[in-house]
Length: 280
Length: 306
Image (tube, rainbow over all chains, first blue to last red; front, top):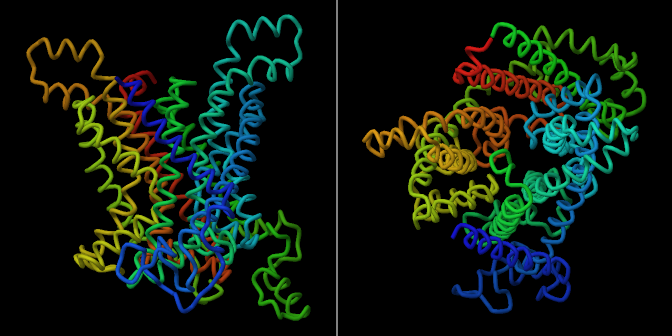
């Protein structure tokens, strides 16, 4: 019963995420309009099913007469791009540090743990906002900030696992056979921690999507002229009193995407590494 | 026990030192803080005079030591915009932020714990399924979007609560729910999984077979043990909430540190940013330390060992 239910939810997540990924990849084909095309005569048009709406703009238009549906479809590109690259960067940095700190221990481990503790003392969004304000806004800097600041969760997880693995007999055995450290890590330790890395990375993609949209919403993320969910919500906030659809639909897009990723991530965790159930 | 306490304290102090280094380094990320703080059309003489006045011409480590020496005494410099001591400005706004954060934590605990217990004891039922959907949605919703939707529904469509501001209880309701919702979902899901685990233990079966009622066993025997790991998470959630407050305060025009900080960030008011970032980070270190100690104190296996 439980497994059927969980695979059903995973299937739902897969379909949902599939829609988002396809939208992002085929945006120019799927979007009914150019996401940047302005038409002031048609500004703040409500969704098609409401009075005053037209099927030409299924989800309505924004304050500059741009098509909301098209902007959401294009917005998926930025969200996924930022999330995937920053997770790849932070996952790589975090895993390498975790492997090294856990395997060699000693002073290096102390420094890494210390750095992790220091970084965890800063609320992520505050850290990102402060750094963005100094570096300047823009897509590249968002990826940079999210990529560089996201390592801690991986390092802590992998370090703890390596500490346990290091004591295992088979590791001692290969060490006794004279195997070099980096080969032991590469061949015998990394494959054992990889499932945890994959599970963590999949769940972190969701966090990164929320982080990017939050930064952009606060005006310190992706440039305002690029159609993103965060930018749409920032616009929508200004018009919340008279045009609810501006802020509602992009938020729904974020929520459903994050939900899809979390569902898949949970399923992946149960499949690959049930031990993580309570720690992630 | 005492030794453990001492090592935790020493660690916290080290972390605070690291935090100070980072707060100091923020300005130096791009190289020259003078160009960051001065208007773009400043002449090179003005830049030079500013560098001289701010002590930017000495080596970085000397600047840091000087900055740290002053920071220890609570002197983060004058806010560039408000022309008042940065720390005073931050501390003035602190009560509002603490109020919001605690209210949000209250929301999260008062809803997350009962929901988690209920879902664990009704495992497999439709209501538990509905609960898990609620939890999944709660964790998928960005704080700022939930805040906007609350404003839309309960501020505009059915105007029960004021849209923004601070002062009355009614004004606290929406920001507290928006901020606390994610933590509700986190606490609920975590407690549920721990409860399910605990409810399968032998001693629970023993308690049940003694003829104790289901409610008593669930609440007294199971919950007390399942809550232990939740304590740590609640401590961590406080840090998450303090961070989330930065965004929530801005949407609800809540006059706290978060709102002041975002204004400072937009104005490039560096001393104010440094003071704010430092104060928040130190608060989080202290909260984590307390959580740690609370956990040790609550778990007799650790408490009695040392």
